[in-house]
Image 1 (tube, helix red, strand yellow):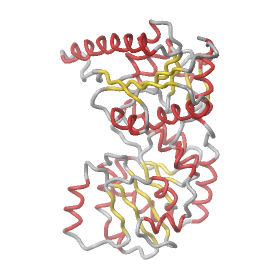
Image 2: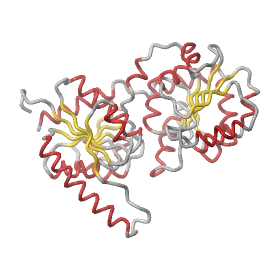
Image 3: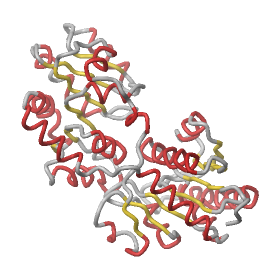
Length: 374
């Protein structure tokens, strides 16, 4: 790479926070290391990256790309493939005008046409795979990438071993930079400063099973004078839950929110976190050393959340509760764990040992190495 030419990087992918948070973290790390760098995101029209990326301060171009319809022989997939080809041509035009030295794919619909186009034009590519079970898009792109950054061991099942770099998953930096105390964090939610606290999060849209688990054990929660709960219902379920809660006796030790914007405070407040098993969430819990109960979503590709959760629970770094058992077991398990000091200490110690430090910085360095070769 010419010394006087600024670093230019194209970043593609999204669809969920699990793809977008790492992508933005990588971009931030590139900017930190190379303030002159120019970064362009490529996303899928109508997906959440089209709002989240500009909010993080980056320009994004949208593609009309979408996922295949099941069953695969459906005639609707003719339109899907035509949109893919159109998207690939759009990316080629973007590459010719933006002139990136390297393209980064983080998974999600937009990654496929973007990295295919980059490969066909001779632009080096780097893939970042967040999960312990590689996604379809990243598996199909592996042959075209020079480097594959992963967060779990054993990824040789999916990618050429010589391309793999163990980096871990980048996480939201503000979670690590917070200085708020546990007591202050609890008070910020209107809770008691010295009472043990359980945080239940099902993602920004919510998780039906986890919400049903809480709703079916409101009486158990109400009777707990020594434990309080923060419960993120998700915006999708908030209205129906609010209506249901109006019809029952108030639960004073249950703080109900449709969406938690200050996740740094929520994590700081919690003794135990009950969560889905998305890769980004797990990486955050590892870095923060948070005792956790993981309830993998069964509605994800290749059941990858179960594989993510087992990667921790088999090392005694998390407690695994199957989605089908959650309604019956989850609240009772959370109450048992949050009162067990030895178990909390053991889970915290073990989960912290699985953390990767400075993942975004390491990936940014690999991005620069590839750009320099180009």
